[in-house]
Length: 267
Image 1: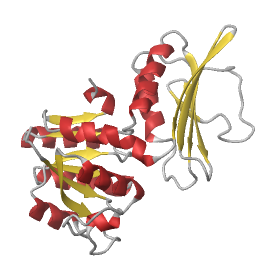
Image 2: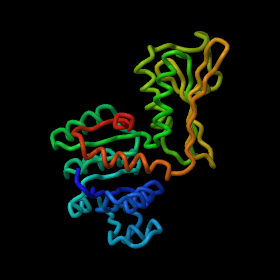
Image 3: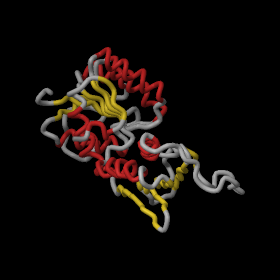
Image 4: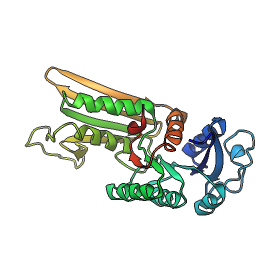
């Protein structure tokens, strides 16, 4: 790994993007190589995030920014509709993608992994960068071996675009990897209001709550004979994800291929 990692940030004008820019500017092992935000306008990236000017002007176009920046890593917290194209553009420029946006299909992940392998660079797609949330997912998978009856409830603000959340889907995938499919509930169960029982996954249900004033929480509820177990994680602000992003930026410099899930790079 080089002494200083040159990081480009796309979605730099967004709420998560601004936190990433601040993190990069404050980490002595990183240099901000580029900041991209079509809506932010030509402004110094440091000024945009409320710190001293850093000499990097926010660009409007990713392709141009990567061509000029000599970046090592691209961090993307944009939207599902743009993330796949952004990731592919980064790889074609030899830039390692660290993606916090959800919505990739298994086929897209396989394709992007192949491109990373061909370019001999690493990449990461992570539905959640919160270390606490990753532990919550791992604990839930472990618990499902002993409590196979479960439901997932995830809570986010009312402006979140996707449901269920990427974190809940990743949790469900981890559980499905160690628990045989078990269709829960009464076999004669009938929904009198469509969707009342939530989304179906591998025999259990995922419920998405969307309300103003909510940031990001998830709980996995397990039921057994005479007892229940609840595993819950609460996030209160976006800065809580930045230690995980910093780890990802540094780790992605050390391997080849695309990894799906932050848990795979945790020590």
